[in-house]
Amino acid sequence: MSLGATVVVAVALVAAGVAVLLSLRANLTGQAQSQADDTARRIALDVASRGADPRRYARLELPEGTPVQVTTEDGRLLAVSRGLERISGTGIAAVRAVPVPAATPTPTPTPSAVPGDDHGGGDDGGHGRGRGRGGRDDESRGGEDDDRHGGIGTASPAVGDDPVVGAIGRTVAHGTGRATLDGRTADYRFATVKATDLAGQTVLIHAGASLAARESAVNTAAAAMLAGLPVLLLVVGGATWRVTRRALAPVEGIRREMAAITASEDLSRRVPEPAARDEVALLARTTNETLTALEAAVERQRRFVADASHELRSPIASLRTQLEVGSAHPHLLDVPGAVKDTERLQHLAGDLLLLARLDAGERPARRRVDLGELVREEVRRRPADRVPVAVDVEPLQEVAGSRGQLAQVVGNLVDNAQRHARAGVTVTVGPRDGLVVLAVGDDGAGVPAAERARIFERFVRLDDARSRDEGGAGLGLAIARDVAHRHDGTLTVGAAPAGGALFELRLPPAAGNLDASVRG
Image: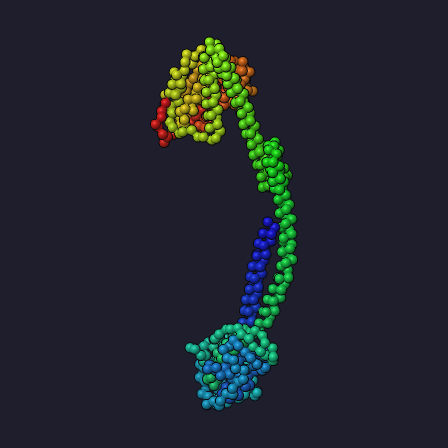
């Protein structure tokens, strides 16, 4: 886990570092581009103020330490920076300027071509534009031109593809290349600007700005990141390892204890519960609750097997004894007793099988059953019992479920009531609080309040029931309660009006979309 977290952090840091370096590179490239644009437009303003002097481009004051080319539109180099030995990225590889041929007489520019020219004498204006940069008039005019063009970045707009006479145009292109100045080669960002001088000649000014600051900053930042990344990963990895080890220590304790429980099969053991109120503590608590439920289920299963073995042992031993006596002395064979023991075994085996099916989660069939009619049929089928059963049911009390299982519940409750009654048993069926209620009461001794929950456990019989020879195995009420739960109902015991026990089975009424093929 620590390794995985460290890898994730490393990937995130690398991605963030790359993003920072790219952003830094783009920002510094933009600054270099702005510097190149500024240099190219500054030279373009100077070019736009030049007249028809053949040496006007040779006298251009180009910045030192910056690669600059002034070319014609057809690629002829007119001026170049001092010390430029090699250049790429401008489209012009030449580094030696070609002299400008003698120009034809320059036409007098119109007021629209030279904005702001308000000199009165035409001859003076013409002569002034023809002078070189060395004269005072030329210097004065240079200042006036700067004012007319509004300084750097505010030159007159282009008209068509080329700027008007005496103006600079738009930036033609941007690019990146290399140049060698005074024997030192470096990368540059270039800008190309058009300008038209006062002689009407349109030229291209290629000016570069060094990218050395960009490369130095990016390389420094990258080196710092590469140097700090291993240290940061070691710190993150160590911290993650310590945190995860501390956080997962309780989980390891739970795992070890579960492994020990599995090896020893001792379900009474419990896993340690951390004092913190976090997910690990909840896991430990839930694990202990599961172990408690599992221990109870296993204990119940063991008790069930032991009780079943005990209950089966008596009728089997009695039947075997009768058969052995009958085999040795046929005239002494107690056939009715053998039949009775066989029937008892059959009923017990049927009860155990039903309990096993209920424990397996078998759901009853969802069919419509008239519970009142079912009670009448079960009571009519019974032989002449020593205790009479009075039935009082309301018609059409339909519930959803298994007719066979519900019939067994009715039989078990009536058997239990007759076993403990003195003079009579009453059975009623009717609606109450939106449910269908089956009530079976007797006039016997009743069930003590302290024993009312325990009598529904398997193989549990109260002391007076154990004293009866005809007592059951203690499975009837347990089966009745489990069947009630499988039918989404309840089975409870209380005091009957006659003083005995009153068992009440509450079931939800049948819905309208159930299978009506079976009715009571």
